[in-house]
Length: 401
Image (cartoon, rainbow, N blue to C red; front, top):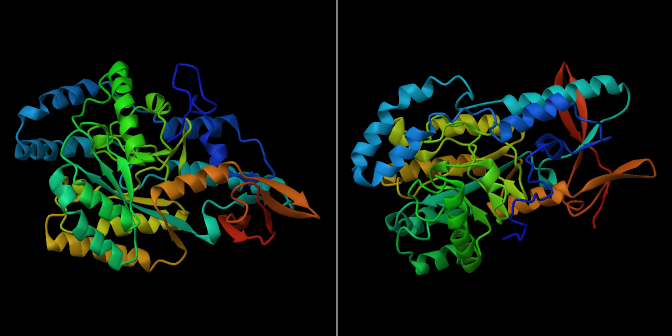
């Protein structure tokens, strides 16, 4: 966990601005037009969202303990047509931030003439995209299913992160120890999973003290908010290495919207790892799909634009061998994708932080990297081919430190 300041005074990033520059990492460092900066910030920090109907969500969560689970699902399914009517962000793919990046870079290349444009590639070691597996464990029954899901993931060569709720169910530490010994990561999934974490700023920071206490006790680096309820301003003052509560686009969650990006960005001092894939609960329970074909479609697009594929698989809903087989089939397809970096969320967050702290230098006419990502980072040169932006690796060497 990080130890950044909490009070109303602002940390270096707590103003929630200029996500675009950190994402681009280009050389020469050409000024980004203010309009592009504002447009990107408006999206990734969800400033475009009108939450005037938030009282309905708060009322629902106040009454939820009295509503039987089958009735809860029925209410969610009946609300689907209203949720699908939202024009923005589009679902399951929203390219708004990708389009901002492409537009800026294409315009920059055209104005530079013969001068080359370089960037520090988004992912280490020449990887073209990245992939994280996360699990939100909603009940102790879900945790008891963890060893079975672990077997599935291990067969395909993957490790995952497991987000647990500290004060909702008894935690079987034998299973947690098994997960850790197998190379998995443990994260925090709220405090009680009762939908009330964001009811007021006072409640949020009161609960946050206990949440961060559990994180210290468990050695947890990451956080995901239950039901992806979120508030960018409040969460920017959390002391986690990373958060993964913001979907890139999701009209079906209790708090619809999304950050519209498939790349990490900074939320205060935390790295935000957007939840970029439709949730299994949405696919299976809300929309009634019988397969995970939607995941393959979305992963194809994310990998094509060089983004981060983050899936959230609830063991609570992987209740049949058929679903487990579909899940394993998806993992097998991801394992076979060339140029894909599979990593734990904490590893991706550490890389993104190192990447942000790494800059460029020129030595003997060569462009080099200088900083903590120097050894793993790759410099790429931008090329326009028939108005399409392409990146080719530039072998220049690097300087770490």
